[in-house]
Image 1 (spheres, one colour):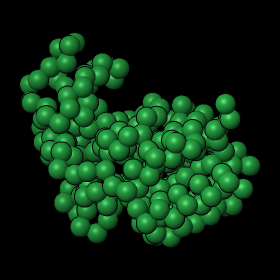
Image 2: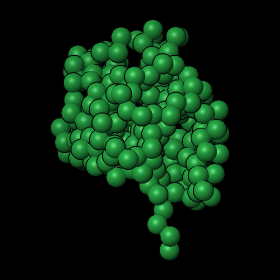
Image 3: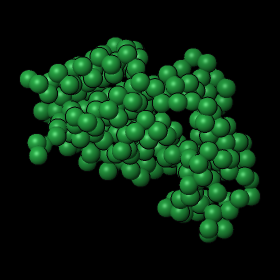
Image 4: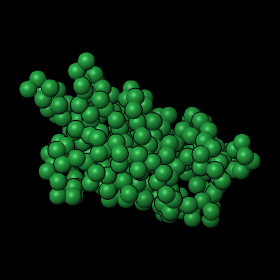
Length: 233
């Protein structure tokens, strides 16, 4: 069997925004409605856990109302031609619903909850709300399975190893402003081809990067042609 080249896709809020997922950073986004440190930090959880719980229950409800878009679906389709792994900063499940099979969530998952004491005690909850007073198996309050500001990113070393093995690195809809995720590009092999899809100016560490200045859906349609044509050369 012919060896499939490895694609690693780093995805951020921009890929899900076109599905209708509200982002923090964009104009009219969540940061204008909420102080991010109140709803997306460990200190915010300690200060007002019920507010944080409601915030993520609302995010989970919103997730039921949206669908994967063309960009998600093209990434899944590329598995027919390449060995594709997605490393996403997003907490939604749109990559899974589009059909991608290898996905690493750096910042947790909306459809899961976990113990307040043991980060490895994780429970699938689907789209339902977490009730205040609802307990994990260890008796502590269930909390969203989200990596908040002020918490370690437990999957970052695994993600770095994945990026280091990429023949082709895709950067889609992420500002590369939030560390440690932003540092992942630096782990890419010098011989790896790097493509960046974003409508905005994005810093990319001085690497040789092919930039497609489009939103995720239009950009992925262009990139799909490039990647499939390259297989025939």
